[in-house]
Figure 1 (cartoon, rainbow, N blue to C red):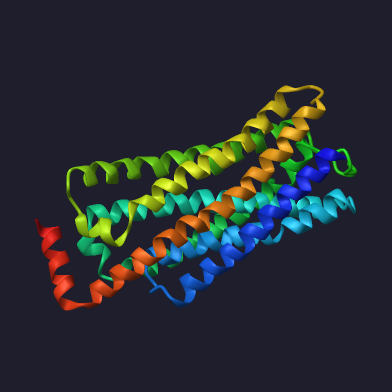
Figure 2: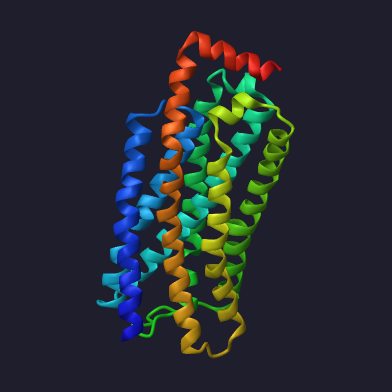
Length: 287
């Protein structure tokens, strides 16, 4: 009983912190920031975080109090949707940063915004496809003691699901995000692409990637521990529950990175509209 109280309190804090912050980020990205490729990608990621946070009360009420199986499967699908979309969007943001650093002239022709729009739609489609196919299977691996088991899944399907979620939804996107980021860091240390560093601050990306890794790694680790355990102990189920809370904390931390960069990004936009400062920035890029 004490464990459930602590778990519900942590989920409540994650909801109260994450939902307002992500709502504000969506408002800023929609109303105060120009429709650039970066803004569209971050807007999609904030939307994914907001959907994840808003559905948190559904997870608590319908699963832990009313014991509704369809709500459990829906919560698992939403968790999977958020995981895949966040990972894919993080990869897209990293690749976009790399393109800005490597081809700034092409990136500033306005083509990137329309391309980012279609990339966002493709990411949502892929995330929905993976979630609808595998979302309800992972929750079958770690059933709550208060939840009925009216649906059964074969162990082979569960193993496949855990492997696909770890590889496609975590490890591969993380590796694809780190590779272009390291390239940008090396270019920055050599003093190149100063215009790109001003318009697309690297700090936000260096904050998003470690946060994603730290908050989602325990989620996958406990799934693998459940696979290796014939009769999972109660402590392992508690650890899995807290690992799921940590994923909600990730959706609370992401908007903090966005908001810390908002003032700097808007200040640069004002400088870019000024012909004198814009020419100065272009001269810096040419050096």
